[in-house]
Image (tube, rainbow, N blue to C red; front, side, top):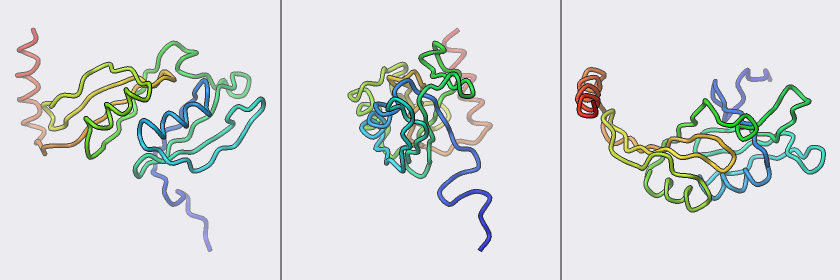
Length: 156
C-alpha cells in the first residue's frame, strides 16, 4: 500500500504554533475551543516537544519554546504574533464567550460584518491571535466591495 503524501485528517496547510507552556496551552485549547488532543510527545524538563490537537476538522501542531533547536520561540517571547488563526464555528457568540471565560483576552467584540460573517477577535494566553466567526450570509465580491466602501466611508 502506498503512503499518502498528505496523511488522512490533515489539510494542505496545517498551522504549527510555538507556545511558552505547551501543557497549559493544550488544556486551554480544550476548554476554549473544544479541542481534542491527538497526541503529545514529552520533551526535556516536562516541555512539549511536539503535540497535535484537533479543532473541528483541522489539526494544529504545537510545541514549547526551544530557541536552541531551530529557533522555536513563542509569540510571548517575540512580543506579539503577526498571524491570526481563523476559526469557523456554528455559534460564534458561544465560543467567543467560552474562550474569554477560559482566559483569552477580547480584542474585538463579536459583531455582524459586511462580508457576511458574525465575527470577533481575541488573543489567547500564549500570545496567539484568533478570529472566530459564524458564516451568516453568502455575499458576492461586488456586494462586499460596496458594503466595505459604505462601512469605511462612515468611519472617515
